[in-house]
Length: 312
Image (cartoon, rainbow, N blue to C red):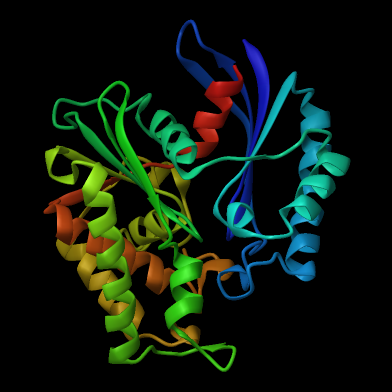
């Protein structure tokens, strides 16, 4: 067993996994898995820069994670940064800060690299006679969404800029405030943006060939939690749950009709996702409608697990 630490820093959240990994047996044992909403990508779509307050929130989480990594004695550490960091003019400020705090330089990976890590993390333990390959793995992040088709290895991948934070800031914010609930025109504009992104994906990724849709990240896992009426967020109940497209449509429409207070009252919804979950759910629904998927298989294992495997 090799003890590794994996950090995934996205547009909305930063997450840590410390695990013992044995590549020979395919075993990965969690020692510590945690997530913090830092909204690193706040305003990046509009300004092209990481905001000072967003950097400080992220660095505060990094200080906490550095302590956890030291406590567990991880032998190898890999820090991967994704959409917001790729897009920012001042990403060197982010890189220097992380290096000073964690002791490793963050790798600002490409969308294709992000997609491959997500695919490995999501499918390595996937099994079941009815979970047939090829798989379409869809990772709905804050700034971007990754699409990967493959069986045991990646056949094709594409990353597009339609994450839940980016869609919210681009379409649902007026005068600096999220519209609650959004107007019909706002929802239509957001859906058109997502549809256009799917057109791009379809140019290189054979979406129609996949037999199993696997959904990753907070928007998808939250939809599953809501679908199950969970009294609190429960990773065990969410991992490998299945949500029919009709239920996804019902939840998405309800979220798009709701106010901030109504969404905040959902017990399984993390406070940091209250203002962006409607956009994330719409991305998922639009993908399911475009691909004709009858259901989505929800995975709690994703890019974070892929990073851990890559380190081992």
